[in-house]
Length: 534
Image (cartoon, rainbow, N blue to C red; front, side, top):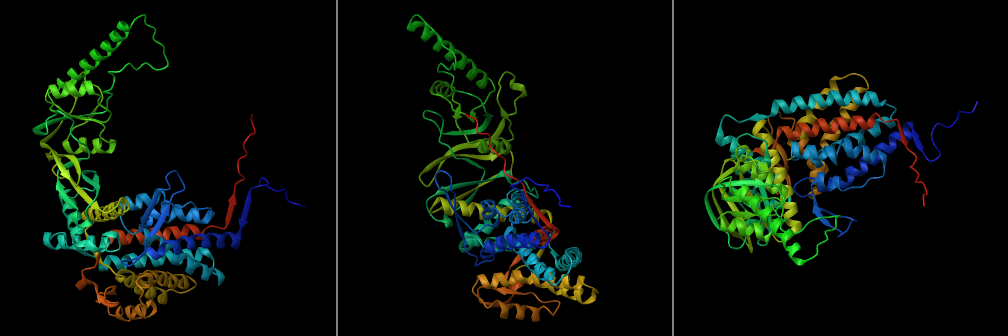
């Protein structure tokens, strides 16, 4: 008896091994795409948008690359959501831990590459998953035993933070000036006093000069100019941050027609509008403020009234800018002004105009939130500045997480080799087919140092065999020294990584690989047809 077709005509389905292979191929293709960006000598990608303006982004940040991809292969899409954690989960990974977005993709891709070989040997996917779970737990325990925590010694802890920042920045565009930027990032994060809220660290990008000219400023800088005829310097400032329309001194009646029998009547309407605006300005002045920052435009008439009252009025502050300004000055954004007692004003010791390059900006110093600071990035072009901001954001995220979870590991492929050795030992003790999966997990872990060496133009096979021999000694600190092109002592070279980043990479990659291994059928829905309505 013939089975009726369940799906619509244009819907497609792939089953069994074909579906699984399609999943693996799509996932590994994405891994091959980003793996050349891994490590200190990783290459950059140029991403060109097809939208208006054909925007170009130059980056080697895994999260940014994967966010920009438009993928057709269903497994690649699954890969994209589960493992690159992009566009949404990748952003969470990027914000939460800050770094390791490329490593997590590469490790998951290598786990699937190894799983493919095992599936071809007729080992069931659920057996592979069980083996991977045992191996991941063993690898995590190996990291836990080797992690160091210097939180009790402030000098050692600051040194750890500097090393982590320099290691994070060494694979980015800022690698040439990594010591300067690591110091900027560490100083900014130490001001947070353990908070992971990076909102109080404001990053401003100003084209011109070189990356070396970047600096950290204590306080808040708003990228706006002070208006004509207004005070250029205010001490003991009381700041009202608002989001309100200050442009109603023009007749604004939309969708309605006003008929008048003389120009005098038009003048009356305009006079009424002006009077209404004057009342609004008087209400704002009644708050006892000497600085008014508005999200929207301020037209000439209200600006004139503020100047007469000796109040500094700043218009069209970008939304993110005023939210951050309200946060750091301790105020709240107001939109109505009838009850001055219910409005929370912001405070700072001094507001003045400063010059950065050719541009004038407004500097708020001595703000209520003492940990607030601004990092001013200088650079040759907007592309360089955008990539520098992404790199610095990664470093700030990693450091703020390390302030909470202060455990530190060595870097340069050392953690992967430590985990691989422990997982290999577990494979020898485990009976049955699971041992093949555990052994495969160990090979996948060794792929990360292999790729780091390959990207640096080194002989990866020679390097990994030397590392494996070194790691037979439990107390070794051996990892890949990219500069000398050989095996080096990671502790002496000062290459450190955050435990939290490595743990997130290990667990996320394992879960993503497990998710794709479970796939045995891909169903593509029929496209929705449009009605040809005239």
